[in-house]
Image (cartoon, rainbow, N blue to C red; front, side, top):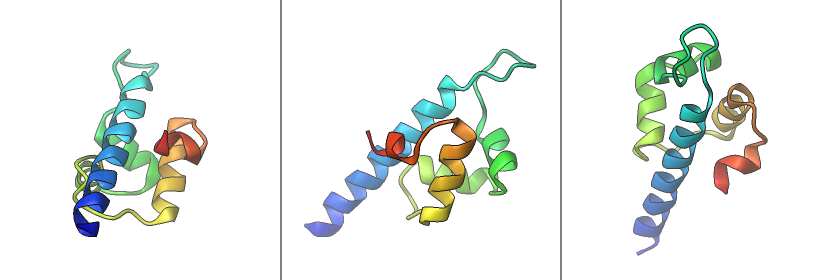
Length: 80
């Protein structure tokens, strides 16, 4: 039971990160920030960003701080 609730929270976190990433518009292309771009900016692989967004992995707090910084939000915003 606990594990299922934790998985739901990981998925919710991932969806929030994806939403915030899509709100960041690349000035050069006029398109939302891609997983690849977020990965390059944070130093993480594109597939790692994808796993976080799908709720398939437990990101470290350092990872969440790096993502929040590149998305231009306070880390609290990842959990709202």
